[in-house]
Length: 273
Length: 273
Image (cartoon, rainbow over all chains, first blue to last red; front, side, top):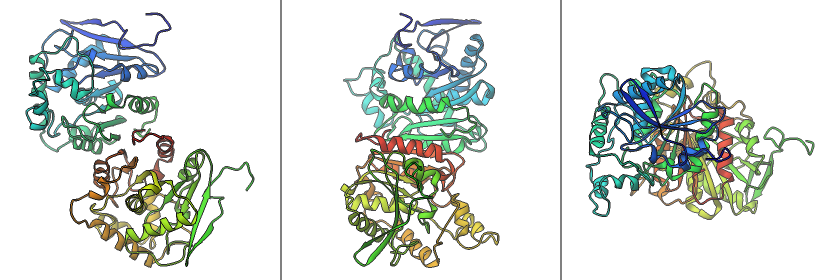
């Protein structure tokens, strides 16, 4: 890769960070004045599922760090069955990188992990972009068995989890995640739907400036979850896209990255951008 | 006003357009490559209620036309008791100006009139920005008698409709609208809450690229109305603001006008901006 080439997910090497007994796979590319943007991926997704149309424009103003959580892609270990467990791995990874503060882009499951990180260690997160996700206590989160989704999963033209690529508009998945990944992550979704005490209390306590992004026609995590998320976060703006499903950020990469960059470039204490 | 002065609502002269037996008050200022932006005001509001912090930046890329509907401010006639009647006056005014196509910024009641115009004469509207408003069949629209609003109206420190200025964050109201204006416009709100047949069918038929804007804490027209509006319009993006009530566009003028200008500058058939 020449020094003048654009920083890209397609050319950045996959690196392995050893932290204790765990080895975490990641890519790190781009530069600029912003804090590094930690990018946390969706259900069964790996480093390769980050569309360069999204990751690369963001890398022109900051470093982008893509991360495979424990048990995903080239990272070692078992996939935790709770979002709390997944967030603990992310924080161990950041500690291993000696990064004590970053911005976070969390997509779907990744958005839940971002919220959990912000709750468990508020100082590690400056600004969050939460796309196609839900607060703890949300509803109808990734119920792949429901008819509107099962029709795709059971379509013989779509083999295994390759159907998710179709739903997400993401073109590649190497190495693919196996059924054990899906099983553990689905358990985490079910746990995330539960809450005790006041509903949405967790997000009410997060002061981080947050941009919530969602497609109006998301069958995997319906848009009302983003309404609840943005209404209950004390400092969140909401951007919702027409004619879009779960993968709105990949469907409208030019719009999404422009708004995301404007949001991330702000040093205001407000989420308004 | 010198030729180098910035076009502004504070310096533009109030003009009167005679159309048949009606005389309509308006202001027209600014220039640029865009279509004229017709701006339709909120409950009891007049030309003077348009905060220059919103109207003036938008006038740097297009003409802005501010309009007093029939019976409001310096316009003659009676205030219609339906949104349909108000929209008919706007279209008569545009016909009088020989404008057969424009963009529309409709705030609150003005957003309902914009929707009605788009339904009754689709070709006259290119793009719409609908702020703090509701589709036909929306709920809890400007019920000033409810406790959360009545506490402001009944506060002896707030005299008459001057309280609305406080709620709207708009600084001036000259000439003020009298109780007859409020009465007729309130009747129009009640009529707008009614629907026959399929709910939200009217907006489902509008293909115009639309930007819906709302504050999460709007007590006058709750944010769920903007959810319904943007979900049922086939081609609408939604931007919702934290820590904001009904007057979100006046609360965050820098953000609002930047997003509005980006949206209006697009010549795409999609609302995505």
